Image (cartoon, rainbow, N blue to C red):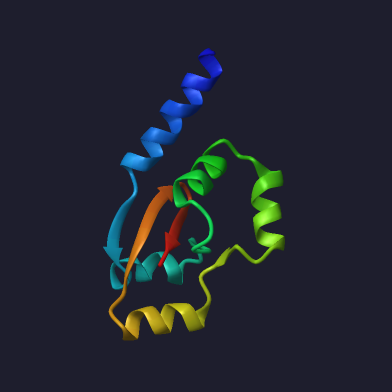
Length: 99
């Protein structure tokens, strides 16, 4: 039971650290290669939690299914041109972003 509560608390912490931000504010993270795109079908909080516990198997699975990838040049340009806001959460050294 304790483990379940600890997981719930960790997810809640990630949720509280998630916010909407203008993509243009994240350009330096994109330029450094630390911005990671999270597909809309995924729960951003769950992805961040899995990153935080270093669940390499789950992250690899999402990457293999093209649900998780470094933000592409095309995405970055489109988001910049449309002055898009994205949802973002920091899981050092990554910035996970979802449109």
